[in-house]
Amino acid sequence: MNMNPANFFISGRHLFGFIVPGILWIVSVMLWIKQDLADFSQLTVYQLVALLAAGLVVGHAVGDLSFSITIHLSSWMHKWSLISLKREQAWADIDELQARVGEILQEKKPDEAYVRTLHDEDLFNFCKLFIMEKSKYFNQKLVEYENEINLRAMLVLPLIAYAVAWAYYFDFQLQPVFFSVVLLIVALLLARGIYPARCAERKSAFEMYLLLETDQKHQDGNLQSGSEE
Image 1 (cartoon, rainbow, N blue to C red):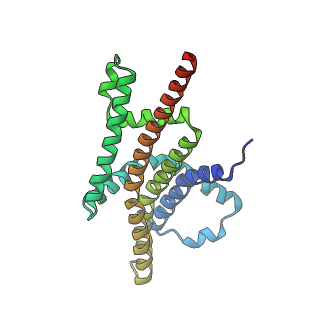
Image 2 (image 1 turned 90 degrees about the vertical axis):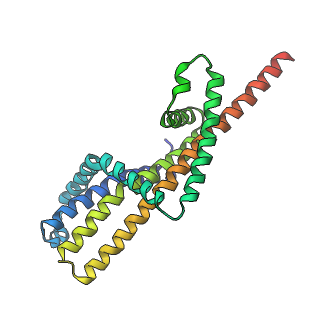
Image 3 (image 1 turned 135 degrees about the vertical axis):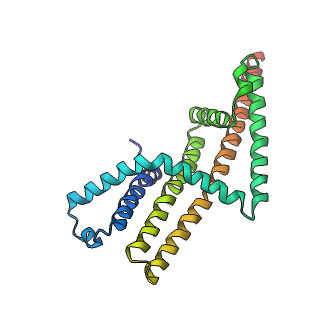
């Protein structure tokens, strides 16, 4: 069995993308109802395990909605930011790569009508599946992108909810409010980093697909030359 520490870290990061947000949601609700925070210092081992399990369940339950809202928030932040020109350039590069991928697919399957009607997301997912089958190394790189995006997206809304609940719990006193503001800044920075990560993931997927296709053509050409000799 391969016990690669990097694989363990990535899996753990993905797992805590559900547990930690779930616990933050639970604690936020407790803060809103003015539950005594001293109760946390008296948790037994079994209660701690139950809290982790509850965090995992809650994290999964609200994960899809939280992810979707945060993705839209990140896109909106970049749409109205001062770096909109960089945003447009990033998408221009992606569109160019995507067009080349589409052309290759049409060359490989000229009789398949569905190839000409593939949506952008379908083409992206096709490239990811192709990479998964052809290259373990490239696939691992895409998994790292995906886990980074998931971790960021899953933490943003719980952090915002926790920050507001924390300030409310202490009746908006100065020191707790300052802590809440810091948490809000962290959450917004996490959200802001999602859009570039998604662009990098998409661009890398198309580039990897083109590299693998080029390599396959070279191999086919070498085989053909060898057979002719």
